Picture 1 (cartoon, helix red, strand yellow):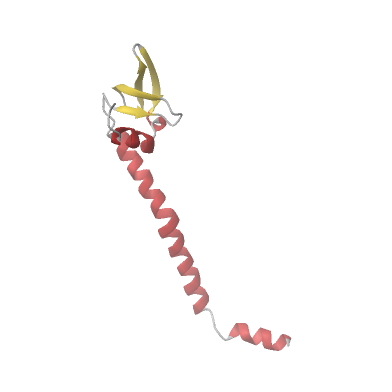
Picture 2: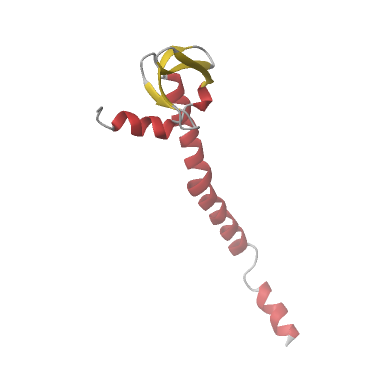
Length: 105
């Protein structure tokens, strides 16, 4: 019985194993790595396009209006006279997009 099992593994050779390994790498690339790279690229583009006067939402959920945009930071006015300084990476891309798609009430 043991001889039969050992012989069964040798018939296929190395090629099917390499093809399977290559297929797994392709699946990881197209379903995990590529979408993450695209999302990071979109977030970077969004942060570069931040302009004064935009309404934004931070990753902590704070809503406000941009009153100043600098290299790495933004100043958000959350109420009249209340201004907070945030790092650009603290601005939520998804929440800000949802906020700007809603009709102003």
